[in-house]
Length: 94
Image (cartoon, rainbow, N blue to C red; front, side, top):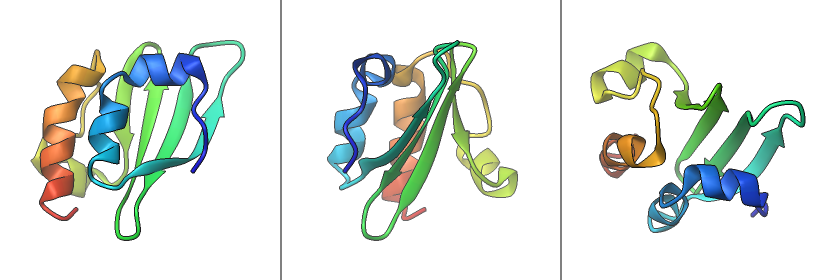
């Protein structure tokens, strides 16, 4: 498990504990010092998801063909907007 910088934890808000409830913990974080951009990898024994913050939007990184049907091929303005489709997608075993 990797400790998240406060700025990243604040940007992700309640998404962090929601992912943790599914066993997904941050394993890698890359931040930009010039901007508020970051990429965080969350992993469990069976799943992983990468979340990018770019220009104030949250983006799930991955294959469009997999993410689009779940409503995840989009830019999300805040973690609350992303949480519901992401958690449902992960609970479905993706």
